[in-house]
Image: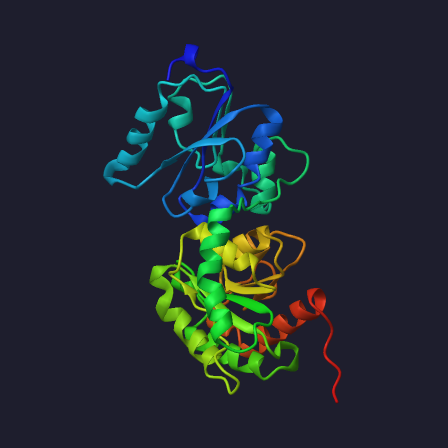
Amino acid sequence: MTEEEVSAPQVLFVTSNRIGDCVISSGVIREISRQVPGAEITVACGRPPAPFFRSAPGVVRTIILDKKKLSGHWLDLWKQVVGTRWDLVIDIRGSALGYLIPAKRRVIYNRSWETGLRKVEMVSRLMGSPAPLDPEIFLDDQARAEAAAVIDPQLAEGADPGRIIALAPIAHQPGKSWPADRWGALVEKLKAEPRFDGWRFMPVGGPGDRPPATPALEAANHAENGPRGIDFVGKGDILASAAAIDRADLFVGNDSGLMHVSAALGRPTLGLFGPTEWWLYGPWGPKTRTAASNETRGQFAPIEDLTVDHVFDAVLALHDAYIGETPSKP
């Protein structure tokens, strides 16, 4: 693409390979349109989060970065973008790429800016925004249809449709994953809780998340009045999974990308934390809470210290805050 062929301002946004980090920085998309009206945005990101940008406003191209040896993926990206005269280059990964391509303006992340701010706030400062750039999920009809094709038949075949609680018993790092058997125990306790009479339990995850999701799904389907589980593990890409979570009334999940997806969708969200900094990486949104093995900022404890009773009480509190009060006893 030559400079003469370009009519609209061209913006390159280099974002993360990780789903959670892509969600945290997703507010940049609308901020670009505010700062550069009419911009055509090219996004460079990893393969897992790429569907997020399929229907994002202003995005005309998504370049997938598949990691290669000797940083070969950066060379591949450079070859694809060096021929464009960019009006703005934003790189939240802090790579050298932004300095090696022609650009009128550059916004390049620097780790020295990490000063204890929440990650959303840090990205907002990077963009020069006086207000936090709230994360946003750009759902489209395709994602909603894919989610419905999986969820609706299971709703029809099981117990009464009822409300849905989405569960994400997955995380990419073992230290961030609450033990799988505790997810099963949590579902058993919730099934016996009057607040959750008639509710359906929907584990959500990718193709590799079947083992940690199995105890929760088995517990949900072992019910007197018929199966209460909805299986959305490995059933679609990340945007279809987001559309599934958008169907839920509550969300409970490990510190993972899906937790950030739920919060960005405005779902009442409970994030489970072990040794990672919940005060920095907790879900961002108006209906979010955390349950941590260490409740004191700056202290650390393994996620195995987080008990089923602790999480159960946190789920009830989330329910009462955003769904309704405790049902009256007969």
